[in-house]
Length: 406
Image (cartoon, rainbow, N blue to C red):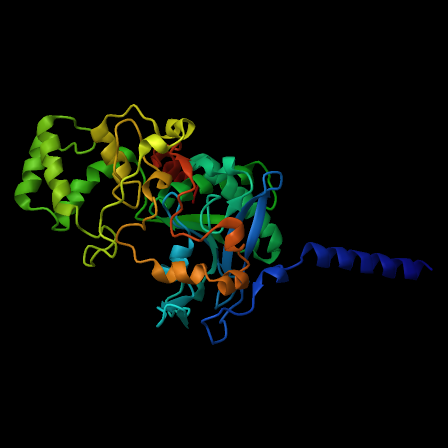
């Protein structure tokens, strides 16, 4: 009898161990993708993580296991910028597992080929649509689309805690947070939340080892003052104009309100206005202008979010560096994607392949994304958000993180 009890106790412990070490959810596994005829070189997963049940707040992810050694290779979270742009931009156009060949007809899907330079060659990649309202991420409570830098960091941290619970076999892997453009804010603020959570004993502990930022927003003054020297260094403005603007602005291009400085800065803007700001050697696909929007049609409560006391000239320089378009800046308001994207695409960006692929019903079903009838069309950059730029300069975030060894 005693022997039988010991056996039962052992079996119970074994079952508990198996349950608590359950691996990736099979319901999230992607078995095939229309347009790709080969075999995946590693496992792909996608789906939703609910971070607020009461609001029905859900963040969507696409996860690609490393092709080398998934159990040991780092887990890398990728975030695109905006704010308001889907991280599937990085998946489709930058370092995802596939290269996309445009469809030959209007009624066929793009053809997918394996990307020999994919980051998933050596890393476990999480592509996250964040904040809620971006890409396939959504909430049943529209108040969640009023958000900001710090709320985005808190929500993304909540996602990570739940994601690593869903994929416990990756909890011990080195973990890195990465991104570009306005993710220069997303990444260090999220990394700081992770460090804070680990110190507070939140479980699971996230094995954060570092973070990566490419072409990132960092600080309004330093970023703003770098634009003119950068344009000159790239040969986009003449030596004479650079000399004139430097003299007129006394080296302060960011918040100098003198008439002479404004005049010379206008000439700099004129020189670079028709360029593709993402790749100066490539033409603009959509041109560089945005449709005008009627500011009077916006609800007064939402207009409050963009109000600022900064002078017009300063706002132009502050938000020219923060947005992936050269936004029109109107008196008293900082425009958001909701105001900028009135039925137009992001200037210079040819997003036809991603837009067609991610809005195809068969693709959405395969990657476990909600139907268009439920959450709307996938857009490269959304017009749903009303976004507070409330984190300020990233210099202190970088200082604290690097001094802590990240």
